[in-house]
Image 1 (cartoon, rainbow, N blue to C red):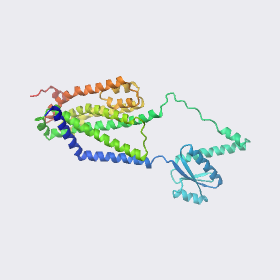
Image 2: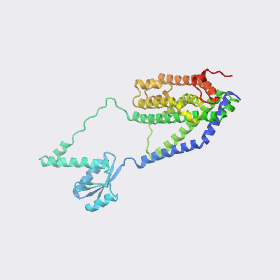
Image 3: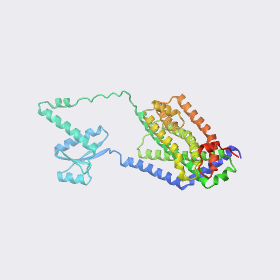
Image 4: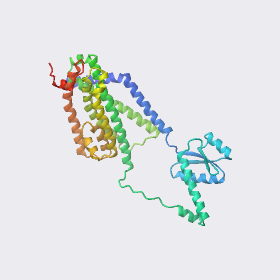
Length: 390
């Protein structure tokens, strides 16, 4: 069998074994349930767009109508309901028939005041009382209205952010968050798989029939494809649910942004997977894996926070430098590309450095992988690099 055929066979084995794993199925199911729950919560717990306001008396009704008119400017619908007496108003509020009630210049609520509705009532009430005070001082109604109808202070943004850019920033943040989770989760799978095969001595049988480089590349490829499948599944279900619920609006060009995120997941995964394979091959048990993974964990977490900062300021020196370095570029460059702050030469340079670093790591990782995997106990990196094959 050719080298590519062997790698594909190993990758298929890894993919099939992992996708049948109960842990993978349970974690994917829990992730999808949380996603559906969050989208559903956004529908039921989002800011209300309508209120029922009870009023008692002519003065309260006039004020209620003014509140309803003012609410329309904020895309909020306030329905005014006339109530007969204070007792009826209190009963309607307690039973949830109305969100609040206006009775003799007082606002009645059940427990927690609906902030948006109460704010509207207060602002309209203050305006009406100011009009009455001005008219009492001798101004005509027209003069009083003219005195109160002052233009708002102008607001000038020195560095204005367009709505389109804000939407892309949100897409970039979600992308960085997804990349962080996937890189760490599937990198750990590579390391844990190596330790499992090493502890059970299965790897000795495998290395007697295939080369270490073929086994390593097949393992990384199979788990990487599984990661992409899971990303597609979560993304497709999240997108479909959000569209049905109307809780998320994707800007034009979001498909390209998602493609950028997936592309950098591939680059980042192959880079980190080789390092995670090394981390797994130099320890004999799962209990010892955490200590060798700590440097990689710190590196991914630091890159994640730099990626978040780059989403806020993609043109900063830190963001530019981090987007070029292979360890951090998968979590930083996508945001800069999505926000239009990465010139073509920087993108190409970053891709070249990531691919070059991965290609340079594979022979070193293969050597450590082969030496460390065949050892029964813990192996030091220097020892694995110095030793020569028989």
